[in-house]
Length: 178
Image (tube, rainbow, N blue to C red):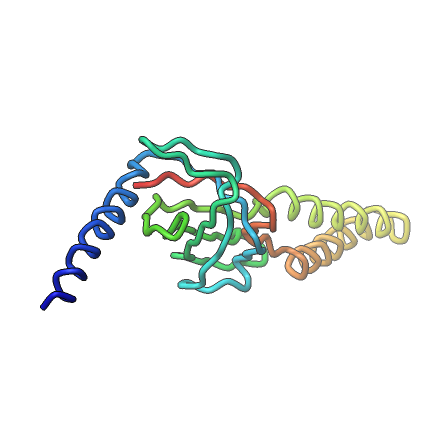
């Protein structure tokens, strides 16, 4: 009976401390997270976790989260990149800071657009084909060469066109605590 009472006396302050620590990161606090590893929309799966650290000290309510504090999070959505359109997407969320459970607003990251890259590859192929065809066969050859060059450029764009969403090691992304 006496040991049960001692356990109760020790447990109550511990619970109160945990509750007050969780309340120290108020909603709306922005936390800059420096990533430890790379994430890619081509290889990452929903549910994968990531680790990082607080990039710079953050004052949150009555507490300060020190730079270097451990951060964990999870991948909540992934969309791989298409070859000629739809860049890759990753959606991430922070789940703990300094070992304390938190929930951040999701952060969606998108790979760069395919448009400019594809236009250069396809247009460049068509122009080169037209020049070569024009030299070899005049006007008719230029038209045939432009079509063939455009097709070749489209093939190159399809073969090299993936634009994944990436998070590189040491990259810093800001998350907002909810």
